[in-house]
Image (cartoon, rainbow, N blue to C red):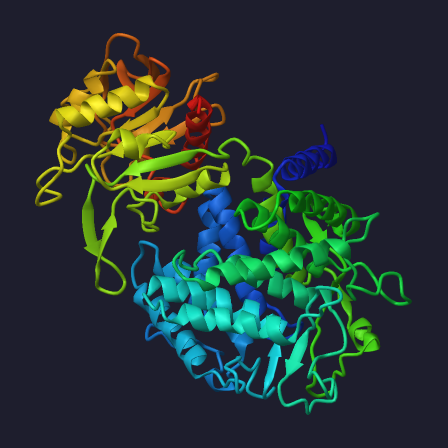
Length: 636
């Protein structure tokens, strides 16, 4: 076979492999081929701190959480390290501009601040600098942030997305509950002044002074509805709600704003293609065209709004129609196997020099670009949401609880206060179950924590109950050992249809004696020995191969589990993974319920997020396989 034929076969294989990947992954990987080592936003100008950079880093973060592939994390970290100095200063960031467009990249800083890694204080300091900008941002008389210092008295829809999701996450992370009222106030001002009662849509900008040429002399509003501006606003709403405290009464209002906006978006969705026009309400008026970024933003906001329970399920139908239209109208497959996004308007603004008057003709005069990041980022956002929507019916109405009573360890948080950690849903560091919890959530289940001893009452609405690594006296001064009443309660719950997960640890780090009394109820015992001892980074010592047709791990071939306690089985308990004569994982059917047991908490972030162990070990895939199987076992 000649060289040309070999190359042709390899090229075809590459294209086929690429095409089988989810669109979120295809676009993320395509983006990383265009911007190999830094994100250059403006043509023929050096890369700099920019909101498009922040948008793309958030998009890559979403793909990282969907795949457990550490290359996305490394891309984010390396990109930010080009700007963030040891003292927290940010190269190329002009603080004195008081420009809200400079804030979005702060979301990536907050992600890095919550990871296990050296020198992360610099990311916290850099985030503090952006927070300082917000605290000192010039405001309208009613407290609305100016979009930029050079745009006095003006609120733009863009600014809500640029600032408020970062502000909300920062407020939650650094315990600033009083700021949530200010966040809600920004949206309330837009709702008060920029919403059109007739269409339900939102105007791009509002000038409190009414002095700008583009501003209506009576209302201060810009003259037109621009899809991307409305898209920024819609995305801001659904993202801010991720962090808004349940006990803050303003959360109800934010959901109300989203519910008001959703039918207006669907009303102006093109009936034939499913996408949206550049000028939202102008339809086939001369010069108007289908625009990619606004369409992707609307799909994201509608789909996420439904998933989070803010919007009626009917809006997912509109989102799916829109996404199908996006794939048909805007996505192009390239010869090299990558994909591209066409028809994103390059920019849209008001005022400035040369002056942008907000007219219909102005918005249509801006260049249309291929692979503009303001479209690529939202395309990934939308793709992730649609991929979740395709699989999240499995866990609908189901609750997965992790125990916080028998495992109850503490450390200092970023504010110096005590917090629970170690195998908790909220722990983003390597010690936590945050990523596994995210998988359960994306499969449609709710996650919570049972912090008290198990009772019939606190288990009655639980479908899957995970007990992991019960404390020894070495770990907790006054550990809660499993007692006979706990055993009776849990055993009865399982027999009535509950799904129990028992994750021990090696003998030096787990309270086996009482845990084994519970395990005995189901024909399982954690043995008093350790196997798969790993020296340093000799990862192969922790390798376990999953045979084909494994009933639980259907999409996983090899995993990494180190220093675990093997199992002894009796009764109905059956091994589903063994190695060298030792039982590694077992399942027992007990009454109407199911028990899953393994001698290590091997699905915590350190071994699922792709940052530490080689990619050949598919612990993330195993976490998803197990989550899927556990939800399938629940009869409730």
